[in-house]
Image 1: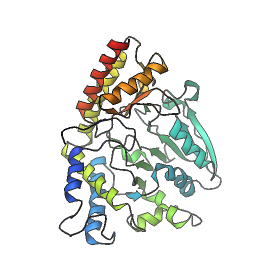
Image 2 (image 1 turned 90 degrees about the vertical axis):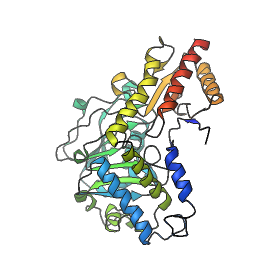
Image 3 (image 1 turned 180 degrees about the vertical axis):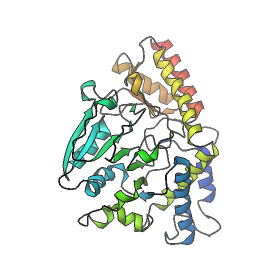
Image 4 (image 1 turned 45 degrees about the vertical axis):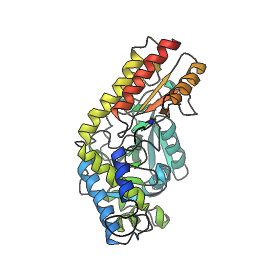
Length: 362
């Protein structure tokens, strides 16, 4: 293709052109089978290799120990909001949550349907423009787990370090920053993420769960909503989102070819700073929403002097080939989502557009 959009969508989000082109080449006839991967049985040896290879690559790239299971599930992170308390919040225990914004709020609301919950820390007083200090986290004595949202897509905040929880399992929704930087996986009992921001297309959700937690599913939980069901069946208990899993595998190969997660992290920092620098150097014309110590590498949120100017920014950006810069409807403003697959060139183009827009409207 000669012309690709400058895609800053918050999700589903940009995928590497190389990945899309490989999927295009293999779409009709995968591995000489005479079938598309969308047509073949998930019980076939060919698909089983796709499933296993994606798991192995993720384990290698993310440093996942052997006593953790990798699951490819459906229903998005929103289903995990319910599966976690259904499986891991027994009577007499409390699910502890750090409340950092829109997605943490959804997780808390689902957990309340199944058991006792507690807010261990919150940044509500600051309109969720920062991640609470780790020292401010207060877990109840009977905590079943502590849940955090590693990156708030809507507010544009991100944890720079994670809390130490001792024997209490730490659970993280990493939907919008998984594989964007190295993470010490053994600190967590469970990590989950919708794939459609950094790992592939919509339709598949990755769950990384420590084996002792996966074995604790109560028998009262419906079969499809038990972690142990999917562990025992290698994510093949029912028909999986096979094409999405295949694309996750291609995305993981792309990350490896780029030098792995550490190299991707540096690229993400370089991309992000191009835009944050323009915000900070604008003399107040652009105002970052997130506190400087909590700024996200994935979702850059900012405001202009008026809502009218913000509407004009979106209009002119679209005319110049930019997509997805309007802020979430719940908070307004502007947002640039610079996930793993967003090219450095797109961020350079946005930075240049911001300078020119300020010159004409500032």
